[in-house]
Amino acid sequence: MQNLLLKNILPISFSILGILGAIATKNTQKVFEKIAVPRIGYVINAQGHCTDIPVNCGDLSPFICRLGITSGPIAYGKDNTGNCIEILYRP
Image (cartoon, rainbow, N blue to C red):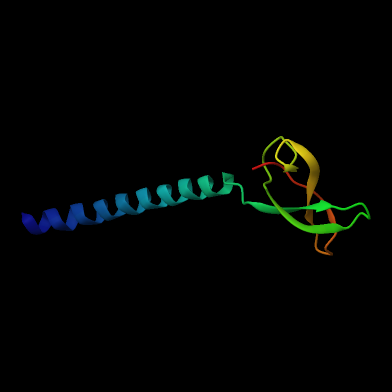
């Protein structure tokens, strides 16, 4: 009786654990997709070049990232060529 119980219940329980693990993994991936990665923004000087004043910015907020949080010069992200043209937002 005990041998029959192990043969029937163990595979079913391992299958249920596998399905629950897959669901938990999928839900965790969705959470990590929503998390915004912090970005470094740079201020443009009077000559139109990026300065070396880094500002903490993000990608998701509706408010533009600035040096002084709500006021001051706008912080831009650098593209592949090093130009400050990418608009960033407050974290």
